[in-house]
Length: 203
Image 1 (cartoon, rainbow, N blue to C red):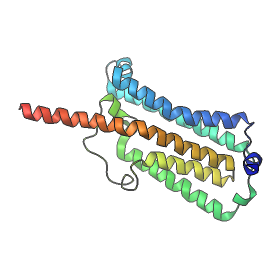
Image 2: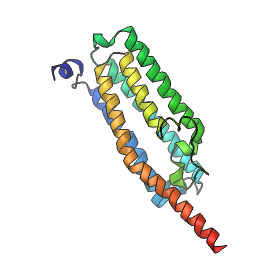
Image 3: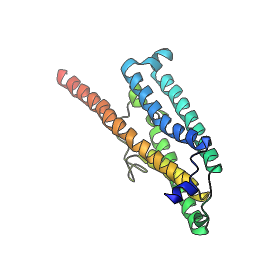
Image 4: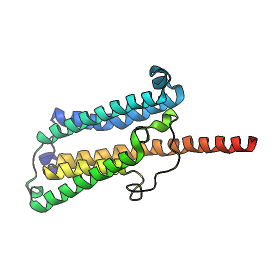
């Protein structure tokens, strides 16, 4: 407990803003995506064009991600440094985590495309088949785990225990989000498969 009090300064507003941003983003995209699936409000605002609605959401989510990263960097800047982490082996580990985390994120975005990455399923823009190549042959959720690794790598690079705590919070929020996203997305594709099967029977 003394370690936490010494190396995590909870009085800093920047820490609170960073945590709020980390929590807000996955809540936001899940709520908006489900509203779109149920009401098609973004598609309607985009004059009936699902792709335009999805691209609008993509730009919004990407922008919120940039803001979250800025707030995270500012929070780290205001936090105490832990000298035991400010050593070469930890710097090397930090660099590897950050690099591999970004590889997971960027290659998953490349494999999925814009609509696959930014919840196109909720707009009715479904992929023909499940992506099974890299990085999805490493983990089912490379963007979430890659992002967490990047956060942790940054925290270790700057030797900030507060950043490690925030990285753990990032992971917790992603794991919570997956509890809602995975079954819902699975049902979207299951519904399509049922409709396809019913269509074949009618023929």
